[in-house]
Image 1 (tube, rainbow, N blue to C red):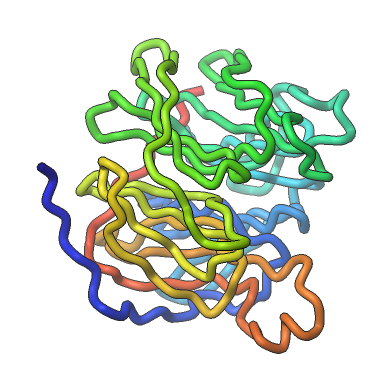
Image 2 (image 1 turned 180 degrees about the vertical axis):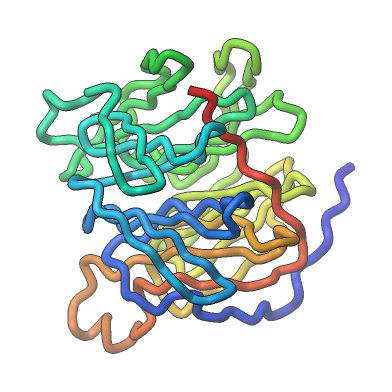
Length: 298
């Protein structure tokens, strides 16, 4: 039985960057630089926020950017609209694969580096139609392999600390799925539901895993981040003053700061009036410690 520390009854949430972002996403902590890397997908921006000073550098990569990962050699690997790219610290961007360049109706979406240093990212249709997305795996030598097809909005992914499980979200299913994961090859099998998001009008989006093995799931349309035990049992929630919560990641020197991205995209005037902080980047300290993100070895 896994014992998890409960969340405080009410976790205080602060603003790390007021924005607003149009479609904030993909936070990841760079311990080498002490910066939070995060994205505004539809504005083509990679942000690098230095929490100690509040300085936020922005890199325009020229097209939608759905996810980035840290590289072991420095800089970032990214999932752009047309395919996978390398993004240098000075902002230079080089497309290394044109995975879906011939698909004007799709773009790359969420992604993450696995424990063995491969970068995974999936696609979705601009009109979010069912079954148009694919999950890809980028390995050394920039070899790309399709892993899952028939997805709708390929979204959050993570791995267990023992490298035996991969967690994955296809948002419209309203659940987090688990796969058996083979670390040496990256193969996955045995897909099964782990936990469900039972909030009317809401779907799971991005996620992270803490040092205790619990999953933290951002809920689009739910104004919250939900925490689940490794067996899928609900284990707490953080409430946000924005409904479109997109992703989360632990950061800070002790990896206890939880950064949470949100979106302002698509809100009408009345909704914007009710949610003046929509699109902000939030931060809180819910108790558990996070894990260092893996780095891409390509």
